[in-house]
Each structure stands twice: as C-alpha cells, then as structure tokens.
Amino acid sequence: MTDVVLALDVGGTKIAAALVDGRGTVLREARRPTAAGGWAAAREAIEDVLRDQVVRGVGIACAGPIDTVAGTVSPINIAGWQDFPLVRQVAGLVPGVQVRLAGDGVCMALGEHRLGAGRTSAHLLGIVVSTGVGGGLVFDGRPFGGRTGNAGHIGHVVVEPDGAPCTCGGRGCAETVAAGPHLVRWARERGWTGSDAGGLAESARAGDEVARAAFERGGHAVGLVIAATAAVCDLDLVVVGGGVAEAGELLFGPIRRTLATHAGLSFLDKLTVERAALGARAGLVGAAALVD
Image 1 (cartoon, rainbow, N blue to C red):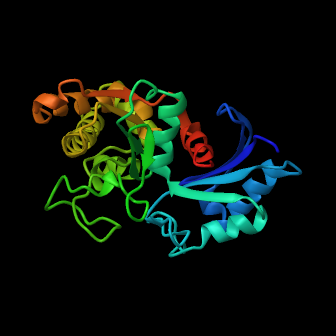
Image 2: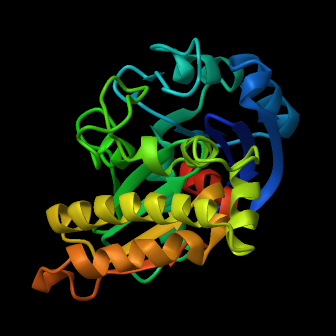
C-alpha cells in the first residue's frame, strides 16, 4: 500500500492538485485558474498529477459553504457551483479509496498546525486573506468543522453593520473590507489608479496615503474578527496567510494594533498572530492530512 495521498485545493482564483507523502511533502503539483472551467479545470489538475500513481486516499480543501455530509460544495466565489457534488466527481476519478472533504480554511489551519507556523499550538485559528477571507479552527490538535463543515467561516463575521452588501447575502462582512478585490475597489473609489492587491501594496510601501489607508482598514477588520473568535474559542495562536498577507506589516501592523485595543480579556494575554509558513501549499498539506 502506498503512503501517497492525492490532495485537491479549490479556491476562487486557482485550483491546485498534488501528491503528498506521509511526511507532508508535496511530491508533484499542478495548478489551474478556477475561471478556466470549474470542474474541468479541477479534473485536468488531478489527471496531471495522478498519472499512474496509486494513492491511498483523497483529501479535498474547498472554499465554502460546503456540506461534508452530502459531499457537496457551494463556493460563493465560483459561479455555477451550487450544491456541486465534488466528492462524487473526484471519487469517480479515483475509485475505491477514501475521499474526505473540508473547508479550505480548515485545511490551511491543519496544514500550518502539522508543518508550519502553528506547530507549537493545539488551539489555533487559520485565516486566508485572498480573493475572499476564509478561516478554519484546530482544537486539541484536530480540525474542527462543526455540524456541516463550515465552522470558522470568519470572513462573514460582520465588522461594519451598515457596510457594503456581501455575496453571502449579508452586509458589512469582513470579506467586504479585507479581501483583495475589495481593498482594490475601496482604493480606486478614492482615486488610486492601480488594478490589483499586489500593486496596492507596492503603492502603500511607496507612501501612497490611499493605499496605506486601504490596508489599515482591512487589517482593522481582520483584527476585529480575530479578537471576537479568540474570545469565543479560547485560542492562543492565529496564523494568517493568503495573497493579501504577502503585504506583511501593511496588514499585520493594523491587525496587532486592533488586538491591543480589543483583545483585553485576561485569558487572551498570550494570543499571538503569525504569518503562515507554508504559503500556497498549506491547504494541500492540510487536505492530505484529512485522510486517515
């Protein structure tokens, strides 16, 4: 029996598939843009890495909402995937092995707990700030998905009650403030002329006041979510990753300043925020770790 697992990580921007061994090492990897075709893109990535390799199971990380009981996914940022039977579709490509599904935030948190910045903590929150804002929880060293697999969906904690409409149907969710496209939209409405979050970070480092204000606002929103979640769940570590987190202190500075103001309970005195160590592979490592 081989010790290799097929891992799939489905997000709003990209779909990644990989072969991962028992030590969490990514042996082979393929990526496709999500916009290139949804399930067709996922199938191509899987077939690209699988080839003739025998695997002992499949772990899937997917943007939510998901339903781990039904094996379906309804990612907000993937058009056409409403109650999409992702587990069944993947199982059709890799018959006869266990297929496990979890939210992408849960898998990111689990991957960082196993091999990344969360190795020292058994009670942590993982946050992905990218096209959207996702999250996942690890309690007592184990991933916690809740009743349907959606626990830790922190991007839809409300931080501005009268804020912008969100794709989830609510208003003022953290995602509407801190996600990359929303940072860019807010800055462009105030005169910034760039096109993406990477360019926004470059402008902020060069001293552009609007760009810096966008990151201050986004980091404050993430900090509010962290303070609330840490208080409810009694956490000691938060690991933040995703494309927007590549901005470094532009995002982490306001997060820490917000926590200094809002995380005042005595049991949160050791709460720390760290940058994710595994980068874009955290979700793949965590997805692979779902397989028993």
